[in-house]
Image (cartoon, rainbow, N blue to C red; front, side, top):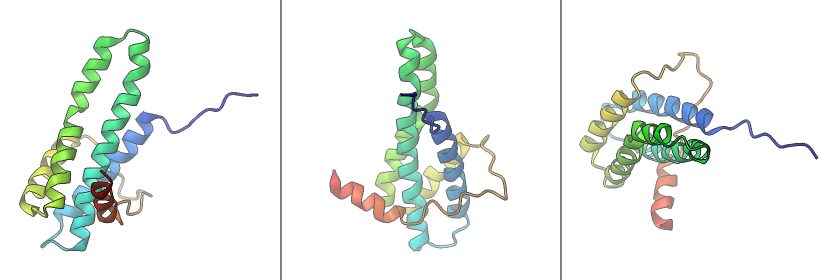
Length: 141
């Protein structure tokens, strides 16, 4: 039996999620006033930042097995903001505090300012339905 290779590495997932977050921030910042799309954008950013945080741990586990402790700790520190801002965005979105959401979106945008998204990207609209997903997560636990 041959080895099964998973092409979805944590780095690829993190890269795709950061690009999607940048797109959502762009769309969110173009909103004149809050509507149902605003909820989806903010909820998607919150959920995506949580997913990005999960990929960080998956990335550093193999490094720690090889005793690359310094490299693992440095990487964790570089991405620690994702969990913090994700949780804050989660709370602000559920409270529908749009001023706070805008402020947090700017902070996330500053962290991801080096992420480039092609104008001809093929990501679609990954934020569609994110508000419902966020509310379901809140109910579940």
